[in-house]
Length: 220
Length: 122
Image (cartoon, rainbow over all chains, first blue to last red; front, top):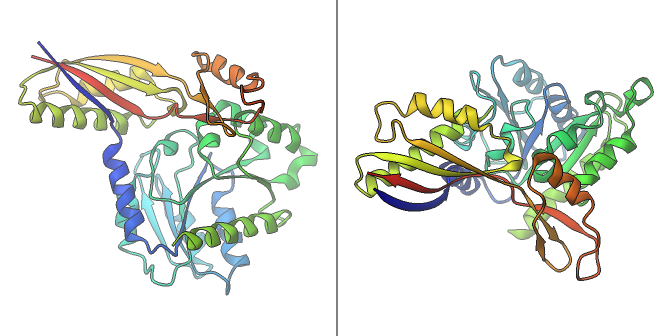
């Protein structure tokens, strides 16, 4: 019998494709990977963002879902180039799928590429897609305990969006309790509370996107 | 839920190293799972038995170890170990108190990933 030391992260192959994605995308393009549970508002955030910044920034979108092109159709209505990836049961996107989707997108003038991951707060955390930032969206209707139950996503996030704050009066949940739960595991990532329906708080999110883009371009 | 993809990656990594070392049979794999990755050991075990059939790793025993994230002081960079069990590390993190540098400004560090540390072969 022989013992062979290896000590390697088994996801190294995904990591290496993610690094290829980074090289394939122009360094002036900001890449965001959107993570949330199903129904927290990833597609709504994309729709409202591209509408608000129309004429200011050029977007492209990659949509990840188990099945259907429903989300891609919603985004396409805003005249934004979009590619749908169907994972056929897969619970997360992997870098090779993003690489394949890139071949179908005209990326030349794109300022911001948004990748909407499969709705899931666990699995997508582990797979680097070549993004500059992971954005975690949580919503008031999910309750205020999700940061504690799914800490991995909230630790990995570079910005945390709290959606559906317009529903606070109707729910036994408070934004402050949710903020406190987030702070328990991550005190340093900006938390942006907003409503994709009414637009309340949306300005802070748009400012975050602009600042992230500026920061990336300053590094070039 | 992403255990299938992880198990495929474990098997690929093991087979790659087995081929390089020119071993015909892998008897055991020693794995380390980050607590923040939310990986279920029994699912990995189940998938591994299925997909390793007919490979040099068929029948290999899987040994699991888990590791929690650590706390890192954002001011001086000192890292501190946290209690191990799923509930305790979070509670310990919330109650760390002041760092030796006099500040109380920690972040969670690590605790993710699936590492293949070692394998036993024939």
